[in-house]
Amino acid sequence: MRRAFSFFIGMLIGGIIGATGALLFTPSSGKDLRVKVNDRAQGLATDIRHAANTKRIELQERLETLRAPRE
Image (cartoon, rainbow, N blue to C red; front, side, top):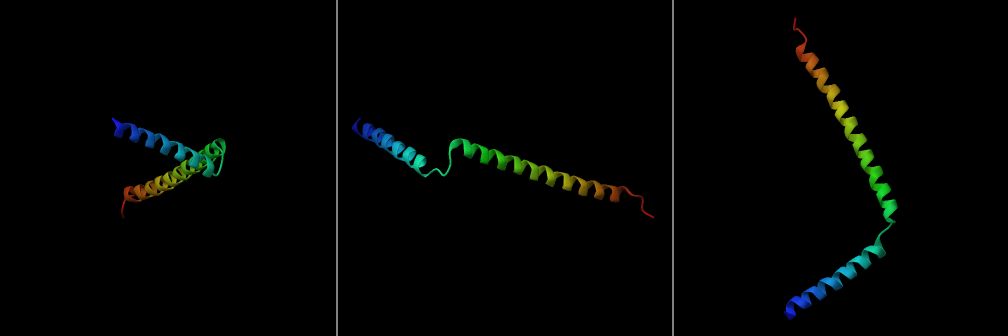
């Protein structure tokens, strides 16, 4: 029983130290961080759409080349 109590006290102290460290060393506020993450996610989605469209056009051109009658 004493070991379990010591373990939980250690977890509690570790959690408090970790939370305090996170608050002290976080470079920006939560709102700023959400805005940055959202901007990066939108940029990534735009890049993926652009790459997909480029590949789609490339594959359509290859398909047209393969479908073209040979002389």
